[in-house]
Each structure stands twice: as C-alpha cells, then as structure tokens.
Image (tube, rainbow, N blue to C red; front, side, top):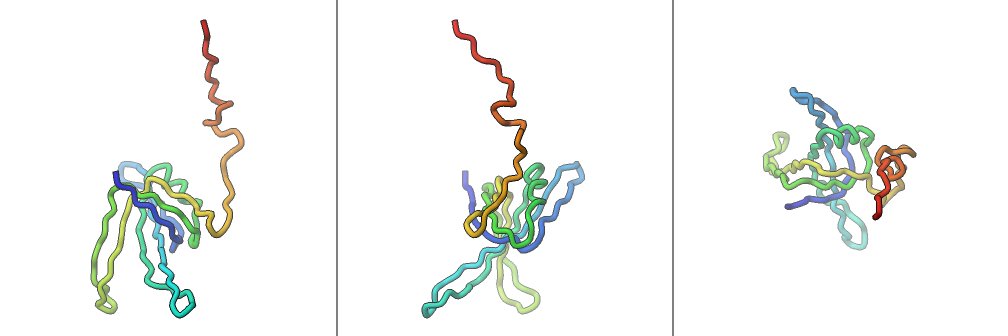
Length: 135
C-alpha cells in the first residue's frame, strides 16, 4: 500500500457536501510552498496545491478546520495528478488530488487544543468489560 503524507496550509475553509446516497464528503485545498535559501535569504518558490477529499466521519471532523490552519494529510493510494494549461496565460501547470485516510493539525508552528470530551465512549473505564475468570 502506498501512502502519501504531506504538510501544508488550508487555502480556504473546508466545504462539506452530501452525495445523492447520503454520504458526507468534504473537500479542502492544501498548499505547500517550497522555500530555498538564495544569497543568504529565504525565498519562496512555487506553491503546490493539493485537493483533498475526506469521507463520512473524517469529512464532518474537517469542518472544525479553518483557512490558514497547518495540517498533516495522509492520503490513500489514489493520488491523481492532472496536467493542464492555464487559460489566463497559457502556462503549463498541474494539480494533485488525493483521498485522505487521516487529517491532523500540525503542531510544528503553534499548539492545538484537544476537543476530546472527558468521558469519551471509547475510554477504558467506560467499556464495562468483565474481569476474566481464572480457574
């Protein structure tokens, strides 16, 4: 299995839609700008934009993200590159599309706050698992 992992900034707020058969789907655009040192100064290079699609629960959780958030995306093995020519100036360009298997806030530049409720239904104390019986 091939995983595609990258970090970038949201270029706009996520968009949540619903398919005809009722499945939730979110789409986010994530930009990654390469930086290089030139003559002792940091210089921004080309920005690569990736359109990320998230489904169902992950799509709904994406709605807490906002434009400018730095995220780490893990994509499934369906990375799709698209080459095209820009209409405005005729230059060649490309776009990437990927379906996310996970999306997380990056904490490299700022901290994040967990929204996890204190009594999450999956906490060990709430499982009510019976003690094993020993003979």
